Image (cartoon, rainbow, N blue to C red):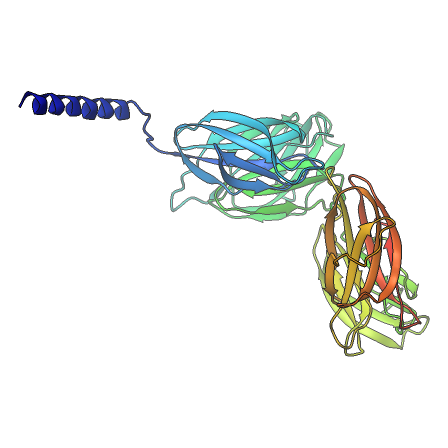
Length: 451
């Protein structure tokens, strides 16, 4: 009998001890919101983890989706694939005690293998039904810029010293403030000099009850201006761009159809002066500035304005760079292919893009082999299989090194061109075009300089 009493006492002690231990754990009373912004212009994608659980990933000039977390203490970890690695490496860890109703933004800057992690903190905004304002805060993450003044006003109001929202050094932000819904222009100037304009946006219409973070970054090869501005909604995932009004969008034209006439290209109506004259087979233009909006686009036979070859239009968005290829379809008609190139250099690898412009009535495409320099393709598999004519260019990350490229018939080792040598270094961005040849048994692979 005594044994059962003793066992009951021991079990009760274990139970009440466990309850006491459980009650000592911190308990959440609410939530905060977390995101990360990547401010390293040459970086690959960063992954963000809470403890060991992935919660988001961020390319340059982007933010991870806002994530709610209980108001407890966490370790936030940041990982990235470094040069020569296949798996992610943990490069930074930041402890943070999340507070109820607070909003946190981690800024990843510096070197990718040992980044600096900055923290911007604010309050989660609560809205009333009748609110007619939006909330905005402004940040500086452009490492090449010094101190800047931030102006944000109606398009009719020019920047004047004394009316700036504030002055920012790299890594700083202006806390949130309310603004009436409406049209605004963002102007950034050198601190203390309202005449030295670094960035001036097109007018942007902003609506009520939106919590916004507007941040300046260093421009990269995908930007038309030296600096880029992105806007993040603090609640809804996604990124919007402010466009510098002083830099028009650009088009780059490629003539890739052997049987298409030498052409003049017009972007006006009625036709007056060609934007491009004598556009011949394999001709590639520079980036040419055009007007944003609905753009008439007309190809005529060179020096014969009355001989219309293609008559169409394109919607050109402000702040964009586009490629336009004239290409022969599988049906034997000439058409235009539009493509938005990705020119940003990434320091951990090289990038190579290829487009097939060889007409293919069967529609089966071509195989593309990449092998170490000097090796044959006898035992190799194509890296790209069945690349269709007229499909968007394929961009591939590469380990730096020396390669040979072979192009063959689909599913066969019948070589149409190759070996074509390719030498790649870290950060390289190389574009290429597969052109048809007057000899139908061969094709030509040509590297196109990136502007």
